[in-house]
Length: 185
Image (tube, rainbow, N blue to C red; front, side, top):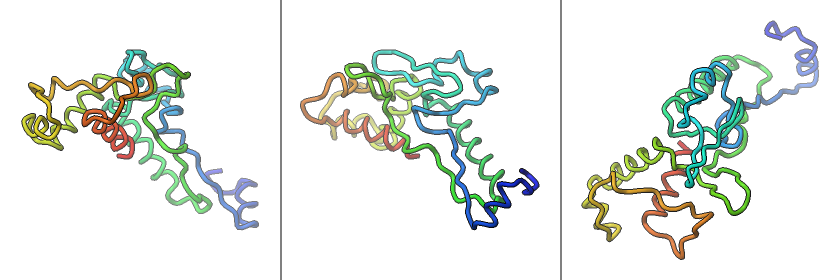
């Protein structure tokens, strides 16, 4: 296959066809974690998504990874860069398909927590996001009409799948924005 002499290459060349490469990475329901990565990190709860009730969605080679974990971010970036280097000269490659839209939800049965962003690393990243946006706790308190003593005092809101707020709050809005921006980034 590497030498481009396989029958599939001849067929694609003859029919002017190509293929897409499905990359099983970066979709919370289906993140592929290579055996070597799991051997190093599998017992670390922070690599897996933690829900608001504390439940950790442990997986195997396929699972729900915590994108705020530095090892997961590094793994994902390396995975994508390696694919790019490996297939950049592939003449029949049409596109990379990164498994649908990444999203911050846990796909639990109804009545159970759904939202990601409750890992310790995620909570710290949320506080850092707020610090970056507002600069100081005083500025955040003015904007939100709150009286937090510091960014460390801010906790994520309850999971909106379990406790829907009667209306959006500054906290619930910023937490949703933070999660979506994190996944897009």
